Image (spheres, rainbow, N blue to C red):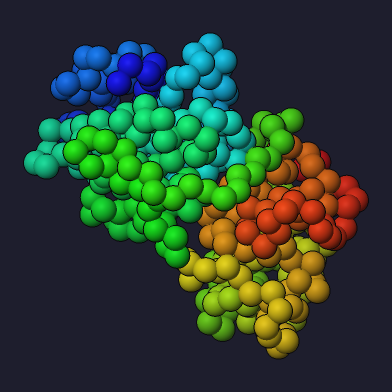
Length: 352
Ligand code: ASP
Protein backbone atom coordinates (compact mmCIF):
# COMPACT_ATOMS: atom_id res chain seq x y z
CA UNK A 1 0.00 0.00 0.00
CA UNK A 2 1.69 3.19 -1.13
CA UNK A 3 -1.23 5.51 -1.76
CA UNK A 4 -1.05 8.88 -0.10
CA UNK A 5 -3.53 9.06 2.75
CA UNK A 6 -4.64 12.06 4.71
CA UNK A 7 -5.81 11.08 8.20
CA UNK A 8 -7.99 13.89 9.49
CA UNK A 9 -8.77 13.58 13.20
CA UNK A 10 -12.00 15.11 14.54
CA UNK A 11 -12.09 13.91 18.14
CA UNK A 12 -14.63 11.37 19.42
CA UNK A 13 -13.97 8.20 21.36
CA UNK A 14 -11.21 7.10 19.00
CA UNK A 15 -9.28 10.19 20.18
CA UNK A 16 -10.31 9.83 23.81
CA UNK A 17 -8.14 8.81 26.74
CA UNK A 18 -9.15 8.44 30.37
CA UNK A 19 -9.05 11.50 32.61
CA UNK A 20 -9.83 11.87 36.32
CA UNK A 21 -13.59 12.13 35.73
CA UNK A 22 -13.99 10.17 32.54
CA UNK A 23 -12.67 9.93 29.00
CA UNK A 24 -12.06 13.07 26.92
CA UNK A 25 -10.95 13.55 23.29
CA UNK A 26 -7.22 14.32 23.51
CA UNK A 27 -5.35 12.32 20.86
CA UNK A 28 -4.21 14.23 17.80
CA UNK A 29 -4.09 12.67 14.34
CA UNK A 30 -0.38 11.90 14.64
CA UNK A 31 -0.98 10.04 17.93
CA UNK A 32 -3.58 7.84 16.22
CA UNK A 33 -1.34 7.14 13.24
CA UNK A 34 1.75 6.49 15.37
CA UNK A 35 -0.15 3.80 17.22
CA UNK A 36 -0.66 1.77 14.07
CA UNK A 37 1.84 -0.99 13.59
CA UNK A 38 2.77 -2.20 10.14
CA UNK A 39 1.84 1.08 8.52
CA UNK A 40 5.42 1.94 7.61
CA UNK A 41 4.85 1.58 3.88
CA UNK A 42 1.97 4.02 4.02
CA UNK A 43 2.55 7.61 3.14
CA UNK A 44 0.27 9.12 5.74
CA UNK A 45 -0.24 12.80 6.39
CA UNK A 46 -1.90 13.41 9.72
CA UNK A 47 -3.90 16.53 10.57
CA UNK A 48 -6.14 17.35 13.48
CA UNK A 49 -9.30 19.16 12.49
CA UNK A 50 -10.79 19.21 16.00
CA UNK A 51 -10.70 17.50 19.38
CA UNK A 52 -14.39 17.50 20.21
CA UNK A 53 -17.06 15.06 21.24
CA UNK A 54 -19.07 14.60 18.08
CA UNK A 55 -22.20 15.79 19.86
CA UNK A 56 -20.57 19.19 19.25
CA UNK A 57 -19.95 18.63 15.52
CA UNK A 58 -21.79 21.06 13.24
CA UNK A 59 -22.56 21.49 9.58
CA UNK A 60 -19.67 23.98 9.49
CA UNK A 61 -17.39 21.07 10.44
CA UNK A 62 -18.88 19.00 7.62
CA UNK A 63 -18.26 21.80 5.12
CA UNK A 64 -14.69 22.28 6.39
CA UNK A 65 -13.95 18.54 6.11
CA UNK A 66 -15.41 18.54 2.59
CA UNK A 67 -13.26 21.53 1.62
CA UNK A 68 -10.13 19.81 2.96
CA UNK A 69 -11.01 16.63 1.01
CA UNK A 70 -11.34 18.66 -2.20
CA UNK A 71 -8.08 20.47 -1.58
CA UNK A 72 -6.32 17.17 -0.85
CA UNK A 73 -7.65 15.53 -3.99
CA UNK A 74 -6.42 18.47 -6.08
CA UNK A 75 -2.93 18.43 -4.62
CA UNK A 76 -2.66 14.65 -4.23
CA UNK A 77 -4.02 12.87 -7.31
CA UNK A 78 -4.72 9.24 -6.44
CA UNK A 79 -4.73 10.06 -2.74
CA UNK A 80 -7.34 9.07 -0.19
CA UNK A 81 -8.76 10.55 3.00
CA UNK A 82 -9.60 8.85 6.29
CA UNK A 83 -11.62 10.91 8.78
CA UNK A 84 -11.57 9.76 12.40
CA UNK A 85 -14.72 11.02 14.07
CA UNK A 86 -17.00 10.53 17.04
CA UNK A 87 -19.69 7.95 16.41
CA UNK A 88 -22.60 9.99 17.77
CA UNK A 89 -22.91 12.20 14.69
CA UNK A 90 -20.72 10.31 12.23
CA UNK A 91 -23.74 9.43 10.10
CA UNK A 92 -24.64 13.10 9.72
CA UNK A 93 -21.20 14.50 9.00
CA UNK A 94 -20.28 11.64 6.62
CA UNK A 95 -23.59 12.03 4.78
CA UNK A 96 -23.11 15.80 4.49
CA UNK A 97 -19.62 15.34 3.00
CA UNK A 98 -21.02 12.79 0.54
CA UNK A 99 -23.90 15.09 -0.42
CA UNK A 100 -21.50 17.98 -1.02
CA UNK A 101 -19.58 15.71 -3.40
CA UNK A 102 -16.15 14.11 -3.23
CA UNK A 103 -15.89 12.81 -6.81
CA UNK A 104 -13.76 9.69 -7.24
CA UNK A 105 -11.56 10.32 -4.16
CA UNK A 106 -11.88 7.56 -1.56
CA UNK A 107 -13.12 9.09 1.68
CA UNK A 108 -13.59 6.81 4.68
CA UNK A 109 -14.95 7.75 8.10
CA UNK A 110 -14.14 5.65 11.13
CA UNK A 111 -14.10 5.90 14.91
CA UNK A 112 -14.31 3.76 18.02
CA UNK A 113 -16.76 2.69 20.67
CA UNK A 114 -14.09 2.01 23.31
CA UNK A 115 -11.65 4.76 24.14
CA UNK A 116 -7.90 4.36 23.78
CA UNK A 117 -6.36 2.37 26.59
CA UNK A 118 -9.58 0.58 27.59
CA UNK A 119 -9.78 -3.21 27.38
CA UNK A 120 -10.55 -4.26 23.83
CA UNK A 121 -10.26 -0.72 22.47
CA UNK A 122 -11.38 -0.82 18.84
CA UNK A 123 -9.93 2.44 17.52
CA UNK A 124 -6.61 1.09 16.20
CA UNK A 125 -8.23 -1.82 14.36
CA UNK A 126 -10.91 0.43 12.90
CA UNK A 127 -8.33 2.96 11.75
CA UNK A 128 -6.20 0.29 10.16
CA UNK A 129 -9.23 -1.18 8.36
CA UNK A 130 -10.30 2.28 7.24
CA UNK A 131 -6.85 2.94 5.77
CA UNK A 132 -6.84 -0.39 3.94
CA UNK A 133 -10.25 0.38 2.44
CA UNK A 134 -9.28 3.94 1.52
CA UNK A 135 -6.10 2.77 -0.20
CA UNK A 136 -7.81 -0.07 -2.04
CA UNK A 137 -8.49 0.57 -5.74
CA UNK A 138 -12.03 -0.64 -5.08
CA UNK A 139 -12.78 2.40 -2.93
CA UNK A 140 -12.49 4.86 -5.82
CA UNK A 141 -15.78 6.31 -7.01
CA UNK A 142 -17.71 4.76 -4.15
CA UNK A 143 -18.54 8.02 -2.41
CA UNK A 144 -18.03 8.51 1.30
CA UNK A 145 -17.80 5.26 3.25
CA UNK A 146 -17.98 4.37 6.93
CA UNK A 147 -15.67 1.52 7.92
CA UNK A 148 -16.34 0.13 11.35
CA UNK A 149 -15.96 -3.29 12.95
CA UNK A 150 -14.56 -4.57 9.62
CA UNK A 151 -17.72 -3.67 7.73
CA UNK A 152 -17.94 -1.15 4.90
CA UNK A 153 -21.07 1.02 4.76
CA UNK A 154 -22.28 3.79 2.46
CA UNK A 155 -22.54 7.18 4.15
CA UNK A 156 -25.93 7.57 2.47
CA UNK A 157 -27.36 4.58 4.34
CA UNK A 158 -25.45 4.05 7.57
CA UNK A 159 -26.66 4.86 11.06
CA UNK A 160 -25.55 4.26 14.61
CA UNK A 161 -27.84 1.62 16.11
CA UNK A 162 -26.48 0.79 19.55
CA UNK A 163 -25.31 2.97 22.43
CA UNK A 164 -22.24 0.91 23.29
CA UNK A 165 -21.76 -2.17 21.08
CA UNK A 166 -18.72 -2.13 18.79
CA UNK A 167 -21.01 -3.38 16.00
CA UNK A 168 -23.09 -0.23 16.28
CA UNK A 169 -23.11 0.82 12.61
CA UNK A 170 -25.78 -0.70 10.39
CA UNK A 171 -27.40 0.17 7.08
CA UNK A 172 -31.03 -0.86 7.67
CA UNK A 173 -32.71 -2.33 4.63
CA UNK A 174 -29.45 -2.34 2.69
CA UNK A 175 -26.63 -3.80 4.76
CA UNK A 176 -22.91 -3.23 4.43
CA UNK A 177 -21.53 -3.08 0.88
CA UNK A 178 -18.33 -4.91 1.78
CA UNK A 179 -16.02 -6.00 4.54
CA UNK A 180 -12.37 -6.15 5.53
CA UNK A 181 -10.80 -9.58 5.57
CA UNK A 182 -7.26 -10.22 6.83
CA UNK A 183 -6.56 -6.54 6.33
CA UNK A 184 -7.86 -6.48 2.74
CA UNK A 185 -10.89 -4.53 1.56
CA UNK A 186 -13.60 -6.54 -0.16
CA UNK A 187 -16.20 -4.39 -1.90
CA UNK A 188 -19.05 -6.58 -3.09
CA UNK A 189 -21.69 -3.95 -3.96
CA UNK A 190 -21.42 -0.52 -5.55
CA UNK A 191 -23.90 2.37 -5.33
CA UNK A 192 -25.98 2.56 -8.52
CA UNK A 193 -26.38 6.32 -8.31
CA UNK A 194 -24.72 9.19 -6.50
CA UNK A 195 -26.04 12.71 -6.19
CA UNK A 196 -24.62 16.02 -5.01
CA UNK A 197 -26.07 19.26 -3.77
CA UNK A 198 -24.69 22.66 -4.75
CA UNK A 199 -22.03 24.13 -2.47
CA UNK A 200 -23.37 26.35 0.31
CA UNK A 201 -23.53 30.02 -0.56
CA UNK A 202 -24.21 31.03 3.03
CA UNK A 203 -22.67 29.59 6.22
CA UNK A 204 -24.31 26.22 6.88
CA UNK A 205 -24.16 26.93 10.60
CA UNK A 206 -26.56 29.83 10.16
CA UNK A 207 -29.26 27.47 8.90
CA UNK A 208 -31.30 25.83 11.64
CA UNK A 209 -33.70 23.05 10.79
CA UNK A 210 -36.05 21.75 13.48
CA UNK A 211 -36.40 18.00 13.94
CA UNK A 212 -39.73 17.08 15.51
CA UNK A 213 -40.65 13.53 16.38
CA UNK A 214 -44.32 12.62 16.49
CA UNK A 215 -46.01 9.92 18.57
CA UNK A 216 -49.48 8.46 19.05
CA UNK A 217 -52.09 11.10 19.89
CA UNK A 218 -49.76 14.03 19.17
CA UNK A 219 -51.71 17.20 18.38
CA UNK A 220 -48.68 19.00 16.96
CA UNK A 221 -48.79 22.03 19.22
CA UNK A 222 -45.01 22.26 19.11
CA UNK A 223 -45.25 23.12 15.41
CA UNK A 224 -46.71 26.52 16.29
CA UNK A 225 -43.42 27.62 17.84
CA UNK A 226 -41.01 26.55 15.11
CA UNK A 227 -41.14 29.72 13.02
CA UNK A 228 -40.97 32.03 16.03
CA UNK A 229 -37.91 30.13 17.27
CA UNK A 230 -36.06 31.18 14.11
CA UNK A 231 -35.91 27.90 12.21
CA UNK A 232 -35.55 28.00 8.45
CA UNK A 233 -37.01 24.55 7.82
CA UNK A 234 -38.48 21.56 9.61
CA UNK A 235 -38.31 17.79 9.44
CA UNK A 236 -41.18 15.88 11.02
CA UNK A 237 -40.32 12.34 12.00
CA UNK A 238 -43.70 10.76 11.39
CA UNK A 239 -45.15 7.30 11.70
CA UNK A 240 -45.03 4.18 9.55
CA UNK A 241 -45.00 4.84 5.83
CA UNK A 242 -44.89 8.62 6.39
CA UNK A 243 -48.10 9.41 8.28
CA UNK A 244 -49.20 11.92 10.91
CA UNK A 245 -52.15 11.90 13.32
CA UNK A 246 -55.25 13.52 11.78
CA UNK A 247 -55.59 15.92 14.74
CA UNK A 248 -52.07 17.21 14.06
CA UNK A 249 -52.81 17.60 10.36
CA UNK A 250 -56.03 19.49 11.14
CA UNK A 251 -54.23 21.93 13.45
CA UNK A 252 -53.31 25.42 12.29
CA UNK A 253 -49.73 24.69 13.27
CA UNK A 254 -48.97 22.41 10.33
CA UNK A 255 -50.68 24.61 7.72
CA UNK A 256 -48.85 27.70 8.97
CA UNK A 257 -45.54 25.90 9.06
CA UNK A 258 -45.84 24.66 5.48
CA UNK A 259 -46.69 28.19 4.37
CA UNK A 260 -43.65 29.60 6.16
CA UNK A 261 -40.86 27.14 5.31
CA UNK A 262 -39.96 23.82 3.67
CA UNK A 263 -41.33 20.94 5.75
CA UNK A 264 -40.11 17.39 5.16
CA UNK A 265 -41.78 14.26 6.47
CA UNK A 266 -39.69 11.18 7.30
CA UNK A 267 -40.50 8.01 9.23
CA UNK A 268 -39.49 6.87 12.68
CA UNK A 269 -39.38 3.26 11.37
CA UNK A 270 -35.70 3.59 10.53
CA UNK A 271 -35.85 1.47 7.38
CA UNK A 272 -37.75 1.48 4.11
CA UNK A 273 -38.99 4.15 1.71
CA UNK A 274 -41.97 6.35 2.53
CA UNK A 275 -45.20 5.50 0.76
CA UNK A 276 -46.60 7.75 -1.96
CA UNK A 277 -49.67 6.13 -3.49
CA UNK A 278 -51.30 3.83 -0.94
CA UNK A 279 -53.45 5.54 1.72
CA UNK A 280 -56.06 8.29 1.53
CA UNK A 281 -56.93 8.99 5.20
CA UNK A 282 -56.29 12.43 6.74
CA UNK A 283 -52.62 12.42 7.67
CA UNK A 284 -51.78 9.76 5.08
CA UNK A 285 -48.81 10.13 2.76
CA UNK A 286 -51.08 11.30 -0.09
CA UNK A 287 -52.79 13.84 2.16
CA UNK A 288 -49.45 15.18 3.37
CA UNK A 289 -48.14 15.51 -0.19
CA UNK A 290 -51.27 17.49 -1.10
CA UNK A 291 -50.61 19.77 1.86
CA UNK A 292 -47.14 20.54 0.51
CA UNK A 293 -44.97 18.37 2.75
CA UNK A 294 -41.86 16.95 1.08
CA UNK A 295 -41.38 13.19 1.13
CA UNK A 296 -37.99 12.06 2.54
CA UNK A 297 -38.11 8.73 0.66
CA UNK A 298 -35.48 6.37 2.07
CA UNK A 299 -33.78 9.09 4.13
CA UNK A 300 -34.30 8.85 7.85
CA UNK A 301 -35.18 12.05 9.70
CA UNK A 302 -31.56 12.66 10.74
CA UNK A 303 -30.28 12.57 7.18
CA UNK A 304 -33.30 14.49 5.89
CA UNK A 305 -32.40 17.27 8.32
CA UNK A 306 -28.79 17.36 7.05
CA UNK A 307 -29.96 17.51 3.43
CA UNK A 308 -32.44 20.28 4.20
CA UNK A 309 -29.74 22.35 5.96
CA UNK A 310 -27.38 21.99 2.98
CA UNK A 311 -30.09 22.83 0.44
CA UNK A 312 -31.22 25.93 2.31
CA UNK A 313 -27.55 26.94 2.73
CA UNK A 314 -27.14 26.64 -1.06
CA UNK A 315 -30.05 29.08 -1.52
CA UNK A 316 -31.69 26.80 -4.05
CA UNK A 317 -35.17 27.20 -5.50
CA UNK A 318 -38.11 25.20 -4.28
CA UNK A 319 -38.14 22.95 -7.34
CA UNK A 320 -34.47 22.14 -6.83
CA UNK A 321 -35.11 21.32 -3.20
CA UNK A 322 -37.94 18.96 -4.06
CA UNK A 323 -35.90 17.37 -6.80
CA UNK A 324 -32.95 16.84 -4.42
CA UNK A 325 -35.23 15.05 -1.94
CA UNK A 326 -36.65 12.92 -4.75
CA UNK A 327 -33.14 11.87 -5.79
CA UNK A 328 -31.55 11.33 -2.39
CA UNK A 329 -34.83 9.81 -1.23
CA UNK A 330 -34.60 7.25 -4.01
CA UNK A 331 -37.95 7.87 -5.72
CA UNK A 332 -36.66 9.82 -8.74
CA UNK A 333 -33.71 7.93 -10.07
CA UNK A 334 -33.16 9.64 -13.41
CA UNK A 335 -33.03 13.16 -12.09
CA UNK A 336 -35.86 14.18 -14.43
CA UNK A 337 -39.58 14.27 -13.87
CA UNK A 338 -41.80 16.71 -12.10
CA UNK A 339 -40.26 18.75 -9.34
CA UNK A 340 -43.46 20.52 -8.32
CA UNK A 341 -43.27 24.20 -7.53
CA UNK A 342 -40.22 25.87 -8.98
CA UNK A 343 -40.41 29.35 -7.46
CA UNK A 344 -38.27 30.90 -4.77
CA UNK A 345 -37.92 28.81 -1.65
CA UNK A 346 -40.38 30.05 0.95
CA UNK A 347 -38.38 30.85 4.07
CA UNK A 348 -39.35 32.90 7.12
CA UNK A 349 -38.28 36.54 7.10
CA UNK A 350 -34.67 36.82 8.25
CA UNK A 351 -33.88 33.31 7.00
CA UNK A 352 -33.49 34.12 3.30
N1 ASP B 1 -19.11 10.68 22.51
C1 ASP B 1 -18.37 10.13 21.46
C2 ASP B 1 -18.48 11.01 20.23
O1 ASP B 1 -17.68 11.90 20.14
C3 ASP B 1 -18.85 8.79 21.17
C4 ASP B 1 -18.01 8.05 20.19
O2 ASP B 1 -17.16 8.58 19.52
O3 ASP B 1 -18.28 6.85 20.12
O4 ASP B 1 -19.32 10.82 19.40
